[in-house]
Image 1 (cartoon, rainbow, N blue to C red):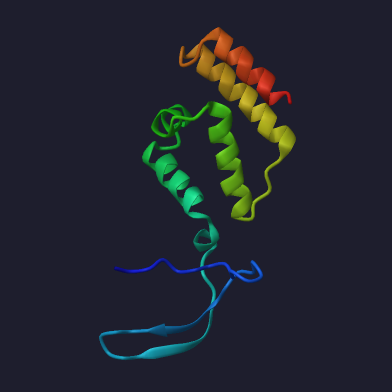
Image 2 (image 1 turned 135 degrees about the vertical axis):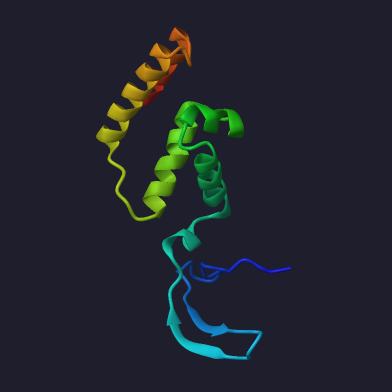
Length: 125
């Protein structure tokens, strides 16, 4: 059974780097400073969310159903992953996108009028 790579130091919280790679077949070792890709530093929960998001082809409504969470929670988790990957999440842009998506969902009949009002109010906070 393989263990997952530990990417964060348990003592200080700093990102770890790999200093040795080993081939079990030919007994070759590589020593140096090898950095993990940015996805390796995501939490297991963030990786699971990305997996579900991709499986649902980015359809937020399907992600809601799969994870049994609300639309704002899906958006919050997505924003968290985006920020953790080192990208900026704009607050104003985020709220404009939320409004458009909520109205699109309402027009498609994916949510009720009451649900749309509730989501729009939550977005204004």
